[in-house]
Image (cartoon, rainbow, N blue to C red; front, side, top):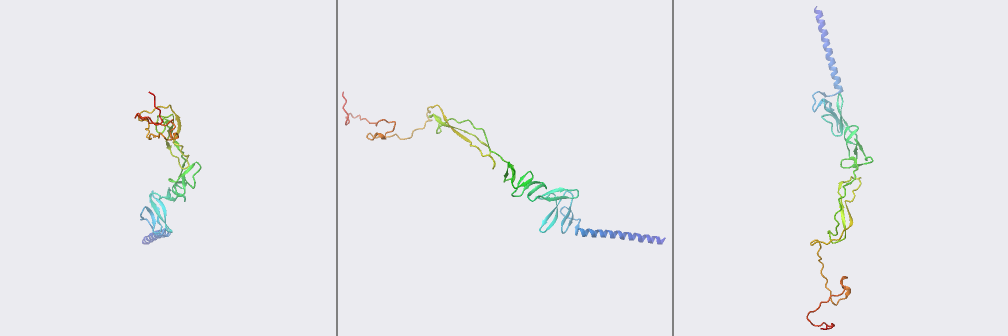
Length: 256
């Protein structure tokens, strides 16, 4: 009876030693695969390494590799940084870098903003915009060409001449229109916004205050000057008569 008890004791002792050795070997294998692996990580890491940073992330966080010099460090973030897009997998949420010509992207095939020198069109980054589109250097996108648009002509203005509406027979009248859509760089240019044409009206006299006052000095003519100096409307020189009663030289005395 005592021998059976002793033998059972040694069997149990050997079994416990075997389990302990298995656990120790498993721990050594894990340390060889992930040196300095820690379960008490900071910054959203589920597991981490002193050398490589985060190795896995907590739920809903994205895993991304950040380059520091020649070294890459794993980081866990709530959203992917600029230049990366996020993809969720059953075992990990991962950030992947966008294409080389893409500054920000929705996925690997759809860019939302291009790098300098490229123009965005339908999720692609292009060197030149397709036919029928033009490059917008402000938004760096390919946009539709916009042509100029003008409103309808206004009615013709009253017939005028030198700012007046009376005292003439032939004058000019004007009409105008407004630009309601300015063109883009490659759009059609805007047409003229005003037109002027000749007009004819029935002459009417200007009322008092409408006629321009004649400020020209009245001409003074010499009675002895040549007649070619006279204005066209004056046919002969003007002589001033004397009322002194004396006969002028060369003038015959009138018979009474």
